[in-house]
Structures are given as C-alpha cells and as structure tokens.
Image 1 (cartoon, rainbow, N blue to C red):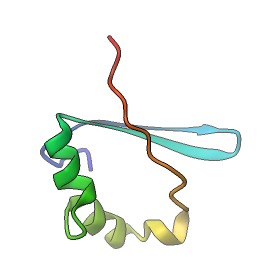
Image 2 (cartoon, rainbow, N blue to C red):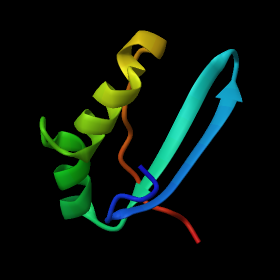
Image 3 (cartoon, rainbow, N blue to C red):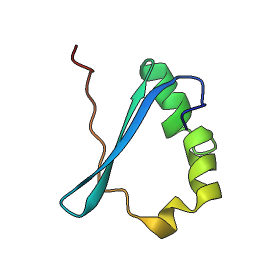
Length: 67
C-alpha cells in the first residue's frame, strides 16, 4: 500500500492484543479511489495477501492529521 499513489503514510502498532493500522491519504478522492472501490488497490492487495484470513476489520475512523 505504501507505493500506491495517494497513500501518504501507513503505520501499524499493537494495542491491547490487537494490531492497529493507521493510513493517511492525500485527500478524500484518493481514499475513495483506493479503499472504497471494490476493484481498487486496497481490495486487490488485501486479496493477494489474504488479509481476511489473518484478521478482521473492526472499524474505520475519519480524521485529519494534526500538526
């Protein structure tokens, strides 16, 4: 995902026995293109690496980077 145009950052860390992944996108259009498209980069990569066999998507939060 780090190499996908429109992905600004990916960070992962463990919290309370869970793995939390934080992704930042260049803008809302990039997010929609990458994540919401059923045939987009996220769906393609998730399928290739078998993400659904390794974990369960619990939630998404929308926000802005504070800085």
